[in-house]
Image 1: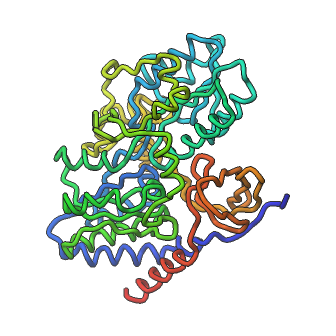
Image 2: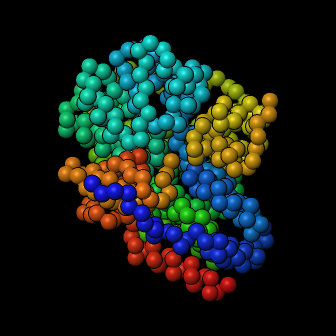
Image 3: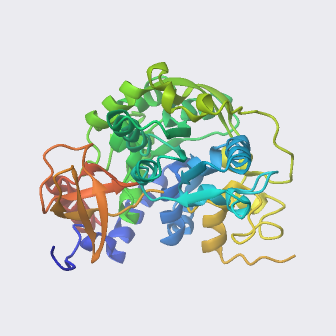
Length: 379
Length: 73
């Protein structure tokens, strides 16, 4: 065992003020020739966070680029009824252990949040960092039923699929999944097709692209003639993506640029894709705000239905049961309004008392805006 | 949420897992989604799984691009 290793990351030189200033100037040189400001969608919630934290958002606005947050927050787009189904099960049976990612436990629903129901007798909730911890839980507690409740995009899905492989190999009978798996490219198609938002281009999510590669976005350039760039998560990475998109617009040649080649390979991650292919199949999925989008979700293949908590516990996901509040998360996720346009933002909704998932998740547009805009709540 | 920075692989176990170091804090990661991981590799870890190995040559290329931009402006 070695002690802590101190080192410079390969990015230490990237965070200089000079680098971002030069990139901003290069963007401005391009936008100067355009008649109007450009609207670009940053699909990924972590990009949203970096843009706010680094102070780039107003600087880009001054350079003629309006960045609009997209649906790239899995916790945000998962409808309440997933939470309600798992809450019902957790409170009804005392042999259930639910393992899940931390922010999923705080999403408010009509039935409370997972965290608020834990004190009920027999309820057991475990927050995990890796889905593999749920496998360990199932292995060590054979008299309990362990359910991994997870929401995720292509980035997270392979790891969760890997637990199905492990559980099959270990012949674990007390492990199952309740998952809300979301696929980014079909959602982008739906956003473009809806025509509600005039977007000039996309900053594609870096780590979704690690898994799927470049090709799944090709239709956006080919069919809709919209430019896009896969970007990393350093402020300079995002600016490089923006510069690429602006240059594509000026040249009239939209494509899928990969400005994160140190991490994203053109073909994606073949091992991860093979795991998804083996255990999961495409299905229509119901996105908060966007509605039902064909082939935009994944579910366990019938061969692995023994690991499907929906079947194992006869869970019912009931769309349309969610009580209406003034929360406008859905429109925020579509990029139709900014968080500050919601009547609840900062008034009845803030990080300690979230009224919707966009104020819960660390990559939720509302939480990010609240944290970095200096908003203070007032009753 | 995506952890935006890469970590360095500092140990490997027999079962396909190992420790990844982030400037002194370490996490256990599963390397099953990548092949041929070695100690010293830089990786992107997401929810317990290493999903990509950093290509240092590409990283240097991007850095060079930034430097060229600086010269131009």
